[in-house]
Image (cartoon, rainbow, N blue to C red; front, side, top):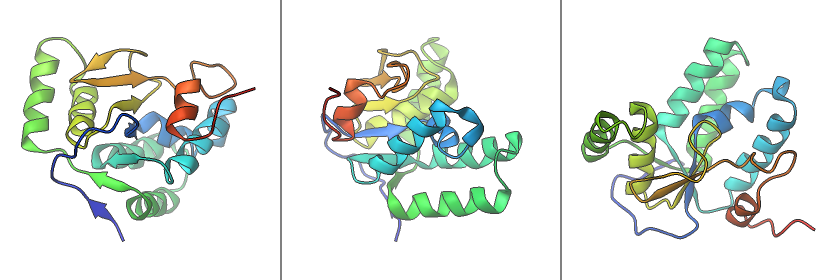
Length: 167
């Protein structure tokens, strides 16, 4: 059963969303270490305070088809699985207006700004992304690169996924 959230949620200090690149890496075994780390992130995010945007799910399907990373039937099945496993949030008219304004101010690409605005409305404190500026803030949401730790997940990523510190 999928859960599409349309109302703003109260912001959680540990609520987060995943950018499209992490979803793609989690299914593309040619990505080496990123594949392994992204799989762990997505697998553990299911049991964490993580929501996915419908934008990221749609971009995942398009990107994996464009790269021919996985067969389209598998990509579609994966999107359907994630729709069932995660709370999923659509972009609202307010999020679109915010993304347009952020883009016009030169703060982010339109699509990145839309993902962040949608995440903000869903109560997310973080967006995990390799493609956006690590440590940056947009609309009160912090961008974090979970791969910044090299071959291991960053401490913040481990905290969000409730893994515990590395030893």
